[in-house]
Image (cartoon, rainbow, N blue to C red):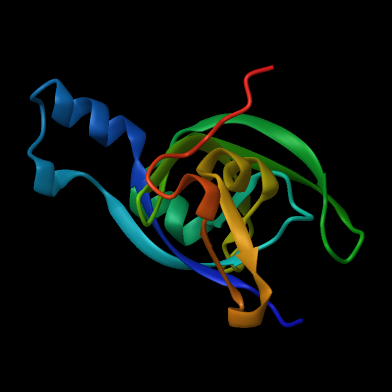
Length: 139
């Protein structure tokens, strides 16, 4: 099985709120369309510094994270960020990886989007058992 990628739209949740309150126009909402590596080994959404700056996402905290090469690094967490995939939406915070690192779609946003891996096509798709609306387990 090869690497799995997904096309996502990332949106500034702060801008969505400002639009809802009438402070900015809809076309002023900051958005980025990205190709993200689907990484079930990462639990959070991970973006790079460029996307953080483009969406003007505020820092909410810092974490100590182990990178894929085993190195430990202190990284910023920004948000909130809206993640759109097909007919699914979730809101989450994101870890900011240095430089132009690849965007990672981690297991928490994948679970919230209710998507499944499609290894044969090397992609993800909406859960076929809940095509029209994401299902969540509350218990």
